[in-house]
Image (cartoon, rainbow, N blue to C red):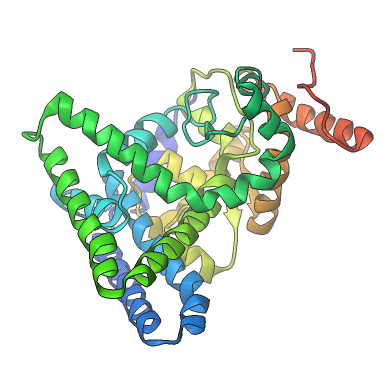
Length: 366
C-alpha cells in the first residue's frame, strides 16, 4: 500500500499546502468582472459581433464556475462558510448545478474511484461505452451508436454537458431534501442558489430580451460545457480503466496525467492542468500546483511510480482516438497499466487492418 506521508511532509515544510484564500478571491473578482464586461458588450454590439464574442465570454465564465471546485474540496479556506459560499455561488447560483450533487459526484465518486469501471461517473457517460463490458451490457441501439458514432459524437455531445449535470443535480437534490429535509443548511443553501440561478439566467434574460435572451443563455452554456469537458476529459480518459483497486494513492498515479500548455491557458484551468497533484492534495491551492508538481515528479521517480505528462493538444487527440475504440477495450486489473497500453496498441492495429471497427470487442488473453 503506497503512502504519501513523506511527500506531504516535504510540501508542508515548503509551505506549499497553505491556502491562498485572498489571491483566489482576487482572481475570481478579475474573472467575474471580465465576464460581466463581456456580457454587457454582447448586449450592446451587433448580433454578428456578439456571436463572435461567445467563446471568449464562455472561457471566463467556465473559469468562474471552476473556482467552485476549490470551494467544494475545502481548498479555498479553513472556514467552512467561505468554502460553501464559493461552491454554491459559483457552481449553483452561477452555473445552475447543485453544489451538493457536485460534491458527491466529484469528491466521493470520482476522486475515490478514479477510472474504476462502473464506479467513476466521469467515464460512465450515457450513451458512451468506456470499456467492452459496458458495450456488452448496453442495448442494441447503444451498441450501434458506440460502434459507429461514439468517436465522432463525443465532443459535439459535450455541448449538452452543463444541461445534463443541471438535470442530474436537481434529481439528486430532490432526493437529498427528502432524506434530510430543509433543516439541513446545505440543502437550504443549494435550493436558494438554484432559485437565484433560475431568476438571473432564465427569467431575467427572457423578460428583458425575449427569445434572444434565451438564445444567448443556450449558446453560452453550451460552449461552457465544451470547455469544461476539454478541461476534465484529457486528465483521465484514454488512461487505464480498471476493474478494481485497493491502493487509493497508487491508483491516482496509474490513472491520471498532467497537461503541458502555455501559461496564459493554464491561468484558466484553475490548477487542473496539474491533475495528479490535485488528486493527491485536493486542498492545496491551485496557485502552488506547478511547484508541488516538481516535488511530486521527483518523489515518484525515486519510487518507480508512473508519472504521466502530455502536451495538451496531443491529449485532446488521444481522447478523441480513444473514444473511437473504447467500446472494444476490456478493463484491466490493478497495477497492470502495461496491459492497457498493449491492448490499445492491438486494437489500433486491428482497426487499421480492417479499415473499420469489427462488430464486437476484441478478445485478449488475461
